[in-house]
Length: 108
Figure 1 (cartoon, helix red, strand yellow):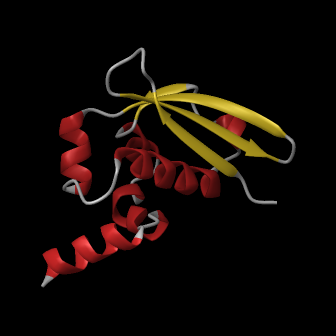
Figure 2 (figure 1 turned 30 degrees about the vertical axis):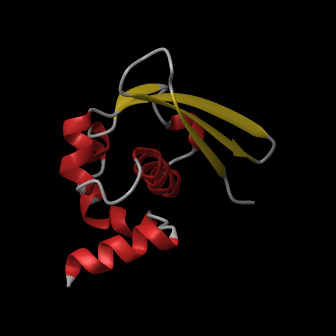
Figure 3 (figure 1 turned 90 degrees about the horizontal axis):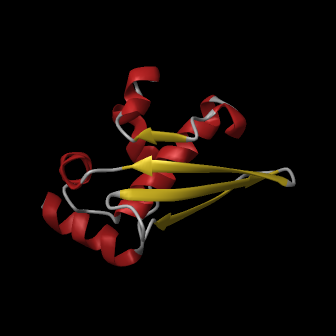
């Protein structure tokens, strides 16, 4: 069974996202800090911050069990544990049609 990853902006804490991972009948919860500067450096505003966090968790779940993922961390820390993170992150991003078109237009 694959994991369901839910990402929501934390209304109580600026630049923080709350992540719930449901898998095999159990769930884990995580708080992920993502500064606007980091978001722009990693995405160029081509995808929503929530999608960046979701894709990062999809990457992490291929590397370790949800229970092994830190309960609270800054998103760039993933690269400290997994050096290939930024290089392969694009493989985990899901674009909606508008985002895909914007990326293709920017590439032309």
